[in-house]
Amino acid sequence: MNPLHPPALTGGDVYRIHWILGTDHLLAVCHCGAEREFEDPAELWDWLLAHPDGHHPAAGAAPAPADAPEPALAR
Amino acid sequence: MTAFVRNQWYVAAYTSEVGREPLGRTVLGEPILLYRTEDGRPVAMTDRCVHRRFPLSEKPSRLDGDRVVCGYHGFTYGTDGVCVSVPGQQRIPRTARLATYPVVEQDSFVWVWIGDHEPGDTLPSRAPWLDSPDHTVVSGMEPIDADYGLLVDNLLDLSHETYLHGGYIGTPEVADTPITTEVDDKAGVVHVSRHMDDAECPPFYAHSTGIEGRITRWQDIEYHAPGLYLLHSRIAPVGAPGPNADGSDPDAFHVEVVYGITPSTENTTYDFWAVARDFALNDQEVSDFLQENNHTVVMQDVVALNVLQKALDTEKAGYQELSINIDTGGLAARRILARLATDGTEQARAATR
Image 1 (cartoon, each protein chain N blue to C red):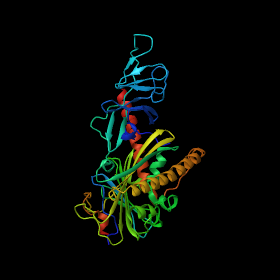
Image 2 (image 1 turned 90 degrees about the vertical axis):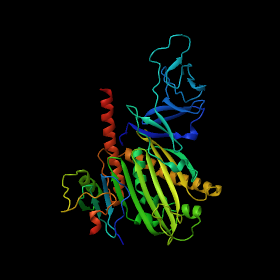
Image 3 (image 1 turned 60 degrees about the vertical axis):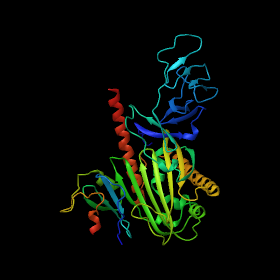
């Protein structure tokens, strides 16, 4: 089973936040491909909206088109 | 308080409310008179006579053809807001003119543009189910004595259904099911998705759909900041097939819950609510049930938000809140509203330069 919900919004500037099933953690995925886990949604938004500060997409990760699997899906 | 967002469309009324009797609404602190011309066109203008500020929506003010006559001293205005008659003299002061508002009738709502410039090509976001032959709609409007941001918070986090609306639309699974949040910051749209695979069927859906067992229940929120909220609700018996690739979904019941969130004053809000269903279209008993049941649910929110606003009013400045995972969508909405409010203020400054 795919643990992450498929995208609903399309567009190039969409932030996605997944509540990771079975945990209390949130996975923030920036439109640039950068990802980070958080326990506090306020800190999460501070980080997401600071883009590009502190956003370091994983090596080889290109910004994900809305209809393609996000980098996090491969985990 | 949550800052007002100018240069936006807001729901001012249902189309059915705007007719040949003057209607007064206050939107973003601006008193607005709404009525319909003899040929059926809705118009909106300032709801205060230029003379002594008497509300033109209050009796004995009245319509005379397409004109509105102030009930206090008889100042008379055309649909363009221009005063065409004053008592006892021929000369009409040049400043005797009411501001008018752009109006759009769409999806059973009358929308007004509150802005410092014309809307141009900008149109309100859509809620097509409210004016569709494939759906049956129940609706209402409740004023809330609270900052509109409290209603946005309330609607973006539906885990409160389990507690505030238990026995109506809330079941344990709502609060217990994780959400996915997506935000298109540029478009000002927040999407919050909660898909429950195996949930208790709350009375609201059991009675209206006839489902007796457990259900898959999907809640997909689309919030178009600042003023339109859509909840796409999908209900199906557990084990029923899912939606088809072409978007058709014959094995499920669909309810589109629509809210027009309209800030009235800094601490009052119009809560326009509507429930559109794609089943039992001609069943009046189902309509009566949903009207009554959803009104009860809305009033549970109204009472709670009124209490919350009173409590917040007594808090010292700089009080702290605590946000947890369920608030991810609400926090996104707050940030978008803050950005839109700043953008709107900058547009206003630019317009006056």
